[in-house]
Length: 83
Image (cartoon, rainbow, N blue to C red; front, side, top):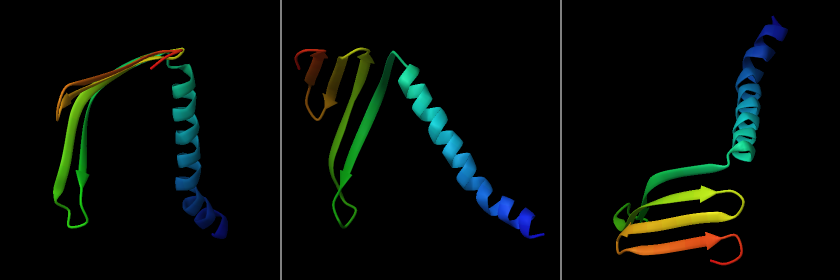
């Protein structure tokens, strides 16, 4: 009975460990990706004080493009040597 209870209690931790390891492996093997993003910043009273939207992309090794559409257009590009 104790062994079964221990297995039930440890299962989430073991699953998390394998999930983290799978995610880290995915990140190491991913050479390119792109996505849209939305970022919201709230103050202590949970009032929205800042909101940003845009997209990002990367191509390994070292190349990335970070593009803000809101609150105003801004582009940040890295080529592996310069930003």
